[in-house]
Length: 123
Image (cartoon, rainbow, N blue to C red):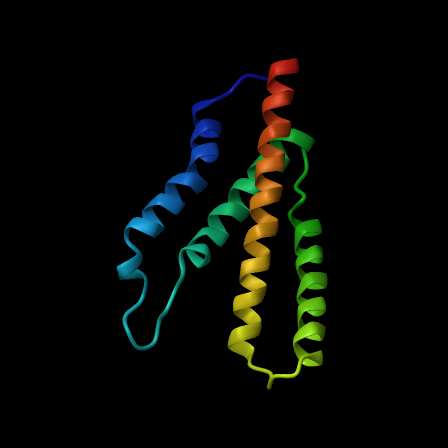
């Protein structure tokens, strides 16, 4: 199966989103209520691209498995946060979980991208 234009756009979409989120960072918060980081903007895009890549490679989505891993990672993070010396704060917990999730999603996306390139080269 060769590349299609939509597939190439899906490959470039996370990098484009990261560039735009970093470039327009000052517009991601209003100063009082909303304070977003670039990784918060990238989560849905990475999930969408991960879903599309796993559908293309394996003919089924690995997104449900990914959400199970997310739940386990969240429970582990909650246990670590509760076990700590400091007082528990939900905002700190969700920020740490978001960062861990971003790293996990980015690594998974890049691995699926490499697998897809190998799959196209071999065929």
